[in-house]
Image 1 (cartoon, rainbow, N blue to C red):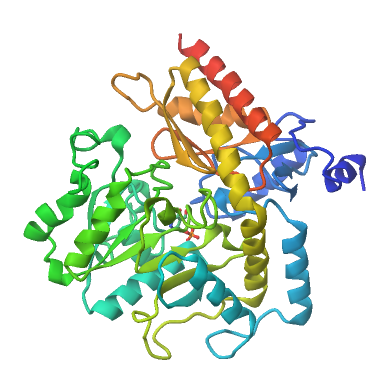
Image 2 (image 1 turned 90 degrees about the vertical axis):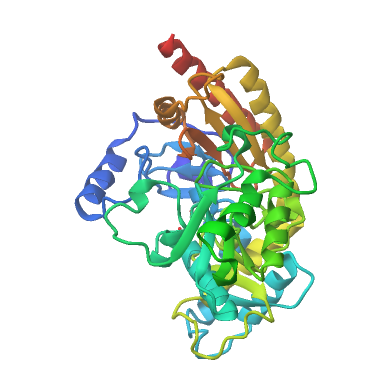
Length: 462
Ligand SMILES: Cc1ncc(COP(=O)(O)O)c(C=O)c1O
């Protein structure tokens, strides 16, 4: 084992070290083979190749070490290969790898189902259906809503991302290229604008839209005041599907009253509310589920990504009285795989022990640093988020709020060149979704690197 790897194993170093030009020769070889054989539909913003990881540090095949402020898109919640998660996986691997939850019983499944029932908001009995991905958890939620209400229409939000399988894609309204070429949408979904106060689609403010009043914000009320009277007969609407904090759409935090108003409208019309907590759940925002920030209690919750620290697992958690479908109605071969479930149980233990608190503390620390950077860099139009789900929206002009798209893309690349992995979301937003184990000096490095890159980009624009 080389000295580099040994240092790495011992976690001596928790900041980036670059040893070659990027990408290095070994990385380049892998990228070339990937480009020959792997689907070109994957979106790679810059040429990072993963060889190994520990905590928030990842190493490429050329021995370059990077600080990972993305965590495989909010997945590696406990950091890369957390020893307790790895140990739980190892132990489970020695027992058995698979048996199929659809056909047989094993104790890990009710263990995790019971835990999730306790953690997901709502003081009522719940039941859990397991899948392998966020999209599958959403599919489960939609099917359940159809089955429970015997209605077939859905309402979702512009900017939302719920996955790319055909059902989930009907809900997704993030980027046109995600739909282009795939024909008519499978489901009957009507989209309304999300509560994006930085770019209010109605040119209102929280003070003028009703957000600070009992009636709630215009963007939620429009469902009842306009949609139900024109395009969506409420008695045919099965569910409203909403991200409590919008992820791929730009890390958008709605005003406090948005979700409450949606809940009230749904209740008045016997409509279910499905919260997509795939990206914002599992402790990322400093609470186990982002819905808790808004005292929001959904009927169905889709949870995935950070649930098993990187193993594929998802869950659809619902009111028990809704999840009363009969055997055979919904299942999959791999959903609830015992190795992934073991990883999830270890992950939840770690999140509850210390990572929730760390996410809240480091999130505040980063937000404060970013707000200071905002005073210095006019390119930053908005800084928003909860816990370690933080969006930094870049604008060409603070008055017009013109999205600084090429500058955001350049930021991603310049950060990479300095050993910092971040990716974008929305039109011109940089997102921070690091492992929840992130430390203060790693946040400092992130802030210093942002400062350096923004200074460089501003100089070039001048
Ligand atoms: C909010 C949200 N829902 C659903 C999904 C789909 O998850 P997956 O890619 O695991 O299918 C994503 C993925 O980014 C997401 O962010």
